[in-house]
Each structure stands twice: as C-alpha cells, then as structure tokens.
Length: 400
Ligand code: ATP
Ligand code: MG
Image 1: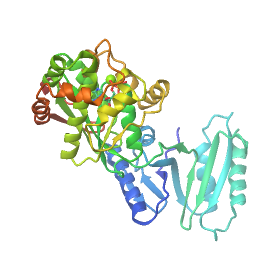
Image 2: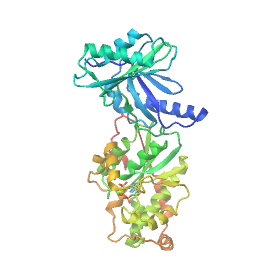
Image 3: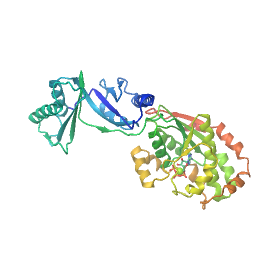
Image 4: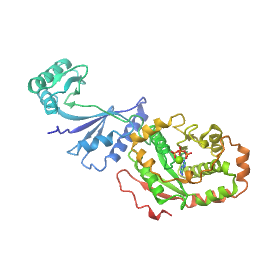
C-alpha cells in the first residue's frame, strides 16, 4: 500500500524581492494553484513567509502532482506527512513512508532542525531514522547516489517528513507581470511563445485570424485545443476570433503577390494592437523566429513592426526549430500543432514572398484600397470564446 500523505509543501520560485512584491508573488501563486486544483474541493491552503502548504484532506495525491508541476512560480514541492515534534513519531512515520519501497533502493536521511532547541541534533535524528529503516527493511544507505531522500524538517510543535522532491516549473506566477495579447495560429511556435511569456508572469489573451471557408472548422477547433493547453496557469483564457476573409481577399486583389504575406501580417498586427488596447493589454506576443520563413527576415519583421506602437515580444526569436519542437512536446501541444489543417497564413501562401520588403512599397500597396474600413469591420465582428482549465470546450460549429 502506498503511503498516504497529508500535505504538499510548496517551495517558491525565483523570488528575489521583498515586502509588497513578495506578498504579490505569493498571493498570485496561491491563487493560480487554487485555480488549477479547483476540482479537488477538499484541499485547504496555508501561506507562510517562505512556503505554501496544501492540506490534502484525503484528495488524490497522484492526480494533483502532475498538475502542480505545470504551475509557474514554483521551485519545487514535496508530499509531506506532519507529526508532533517528538523523536518516536518522526522515526515511526519516516519508516512507514518507505517500508513498501522496492528492496533494491537506497536512501539517505537529511534532517533540518528549524527549531534549534529540539532535544536531538540533526545527525542524531538522521542516525535514529536510518537505524530503524536498516533494521526493518532491506533498503540500504547510500549517501551519494540515493534513490530516496528522506527529508525531516523539525519545527517547534510539529515536524514535516518528506520522501521526494518534485521539480517545479520555475519562473513567475502567471499574471504577476500584467497582460498581453498573443497572436495564436495553429502552428507549433505560437503556443510555445505563449508558455514562455506566461512563465515570465504575463497573463495572455489570444487573437486568432480565421478565413472561412478557406480555413476549415477543424482548423479552428485545433486552435481552440491549443489555447486550452495554455489554461492551467490562468483563471481563464479568452480567444478573440477575427473573421479575416474579406480583408484577406482584398489584400490579394490589391497587392502584388510577393507582398501579400507582409501586408497581411501588418493587418494582423494592427488588429491585434487595437484589440489589445481595448482590453488594456500593454504588449503583443508572437511566435516569430528569425529567418524561419520568408516573412521572418529582419526586413519583414521591421516593416510589420512599423504599424504598431506597443512592444511586441518574440520569445522564440533566437530559438532553433528543434528546440521549439522539444518545448511543444513538453507542453503537450505538438501533436495538435502538426494536425494537417491549414490556418489563414498557409492557404494564401504566394510562390515568391518578398524577403526584403520596402516600407514605402507596403504603403503604396495599402493606399490602393480602403483597408481601414475592413480592419474596423474585423474588430467589430470579433468573436470571443472563454476557456477555463479542465472545463469542456464548447461546441465550435456556431462561430461563423
Ligand atoms: P506558428 O508555428 O506559430 O504558426 P509559423 O512558423 O507558422 O508560426 P508564421 O505563419 O509566419 O510562422 O507566423 C508567425 C507568427 O504570426 C505566429 O507564430 C503567430 O504568432 C502569428 N500568426 C500567424 N498566423 C496567424 C493566425 N492565423 N492567427 C493569429 N496569429 C497568427
Ligand atoms: Mg503558422
């Protein structure tokens, strides 16, 4: 029988600040954890200066561990038992925790006496715990390469005993750094870009450009499923679905084919910035990576960037495709991203997209049609879907 723990002890992540910032960090982190674990209704939480304790009250520890390891702002966490600070209770509980472990495993006991007047010194506690385990199980001690690190933390009234440290996702709690609008396609890159910014504390809202009937309902469902993978760190994630067909067709009627992608991306940025301003976001996020495709040359990025004032974060700008793919597998978005449904970009792909566009040429092409009215129409007719972690996605049929 597996040992049933009573607590999870959470160690905070990259925390260099003090005072109010520290309180903001810990309260945001605990809110994000509560949100991700909201289905486990019996859990209780206790925040202290350097730790957060989750009291399990019988909830399923094995279901909680994989969710907790995705939460940004956590350095690490451990399942813990809490006992009275008395040496017999400590020894007995540590023994019960490991007695069913495979006999071939090795262990080490690491005691930290946070309450110095405790009657036994740390090395004495280590020895007493180890002796009991060595006498009553087949487990062996190995102080260098141990399989099980038994951690005993002695406080004045109670002590915590843990048998494993799980690594946390690191970073800052999502939402602590404000909010940005993410340009979310159905590709591999943009979900990864989103995750990297969430990890730096940014709350994201997603903007997706859809061009029905040239883009299919399956392609939209793919984008929604990608967005859903980004919900674990946010209370909710809104997807702004922009009906882009009319504007896209107008671009192809008025702009030389070689410039069509560049102009299209200028329109995407204009619309995204307008939506961001309305929702009080201060930045845009995109999945561009330098040189990856023709529209991601420095020249293209420069003329595309020219249409917006707010900062555009491109966290993948210096990443290799293979690194991005690795990350997308860890995020569990890769298999969705590689489904073969075209998004707005790929369907209209010209044969020879310009790699060194000129700003005045962009402006000349744009002067040929009333794009502003079409941009305004896109903004007026945007459809908003709100996603929440572990809640079923709505039926998507009625979007257009
Ligand atoms: P991705 O894998 O993220 O689709 P990509 O390598 O296919 O990127 P592009 O198609 O040039 O490259 O897109 C670059 C970035 O522009 C994307 O990462 C995304 O941020 C944004 N983008 C592209 N198409 C769309 C779309 N239909 N809706 C929203 N954003 C888009
Ligand atoms: Mg793409």
